[in-house]
Length: 235
Image 1 (cartoon, one colour):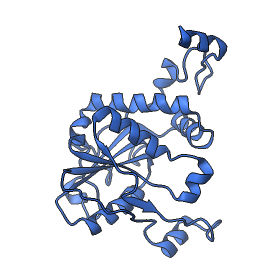
Image 2 (cartoon, one colour; image 1 turned 90 degrees about the horizontal axis):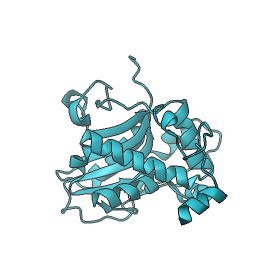
Image 3 (cartoon, helix red, strand yellow; image 1 turned 120 degrees about the vertical axis):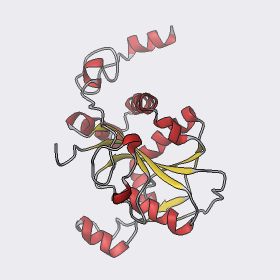
């Protein structure tokens, strides 16, 4: 009854089309096009989202799950989450990613896995107020009964003297933007699952993976879960 009363006082509207009823209506949900399982390196189809053997490198990941195609609708959703802090939409998106993981059977890859959200620098977190990848990771941990680490890897503060410079120039100056912050015993885990909202080339995930592999030379799978990615170049 309380929820009905609150809906009367503060009616819910679709974040994208403003239809009355929910923060994301059924019509707009269909605008989220599901990604097919693929190798994140070559973008060719691959069962279980596994990286092809011929695409592997010293810092590549073993599996990268991507839920949906990045398009104009997902772009609007992410902007609302990152820059306007629409928390109700965040909760809905968390529910949807859990549904996708279960529907694809990717939850099997989360057994005995340590969940690791891609960190952002303290400067960016202070400005934004939150880390979206951390919010997603916490929802996944709660659902799939995984452990969560928020301080294994840290992100360097790199924005102070580099505003206006191109991404390539920043990378050349700072090297890997991530570092080992608080080493932990990982012997109880069979994998680490890195969580991020968007994957483009995969370089961010690989930079995190590089830090882990350099500090933990053990047989540990490195996987990832991402919400969105653009269409493959051949489509």
